[in-house]
Image 1 (cartoon, rainbow, N blue to C red):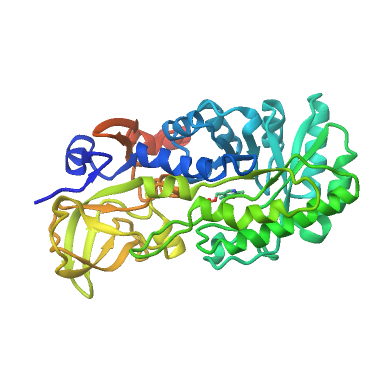
Image 2 (image 1 turned 90 degrees about the horizontal axis):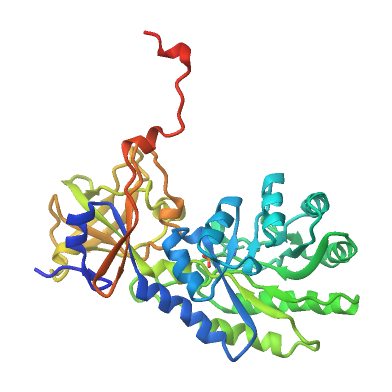
Length: 417
Ligand SMILES: *Cc1c(COP(=O)(O)O)cnc(C)c1O
């Protein structure tokens, strides 16, 4: 009976020691995924990699990436806090988002990070915050590049009708306005066309559109320091699926930069999924096997801990981790414990005969897994461990029942009998 090993550790031992559900991240794989970006661009083009914190905001993971030289793409004051705690330098942080409060803008200006401005409204608000604080803030303009990658519409963010970015034809005007504003320093253009993109040609198209803007701005006497093409490179979730590599991304976009008539600015990329996605598994325990309309395998993790299948119809590979070598014998649908019929993790998968107490490992859950988790149905969130060459570190404690009631208040008048 062979067991699944991850990061050199028997996951059956991990379940015994830390309980289930459990997110397990392989440090070596995480670092390798980041270095693949560094290596693809180092020596080719002046490029910074700003890891997208929303994909996985665990501090240990951020710290590892910070040590590798990653910057950060943050979408909230909370993610800014995480990035800074992890030691990511503020001059390598871009504060994104289409709906920033005054408090968000104050946090951005005070910490000295760059801000990606998503509307003229926000530009005015940012300028006045910066003036009040007596500081100058570097900005990028978030561009809607009007490209349609072939991905789930919920994660296509560069469509013309998307809520993100300044309409393409209005970017130059807004840049001219920003250029003349006090306390604002226009540094770059930013876009992000979507996520889980498997065809790199859309990145070339986006790069083309961005450099067209760079050229128009140059003709208006405005020079930029950087173009940020966002994240979005997909990963192979399905067996046999082929994901593009960072080198292929490079080969798609750099020719556009190299043929630009003017000296193009430096490049920033914001990968999230392609760095953390494949580096984690979610390990869960089978609570029941039921032969009904389908053969249901009910495990202890559902969309409270991994919402991607329910929200995006996403596919994740699943295996029986404590009998990893057994051939498949029956078709099962793996479901979670949540009180919703949509709480399905994996449909119609051929697995060895599954029994109560078996362990199911769900692959490629490092991105948008824990970071999108909730306590729905009164379930404390699970623990996370980091594994490396057979060594294990706990990087997040399992939540307790106290965490479910934390911050709740019962009004005094309800306390009487
Ligand atoms: C979500 C997001 C990213 C990361 O996307 P991935 O698909 O995880 O690489 C990068 N930049 C911005 C602005 C984002 O919203």
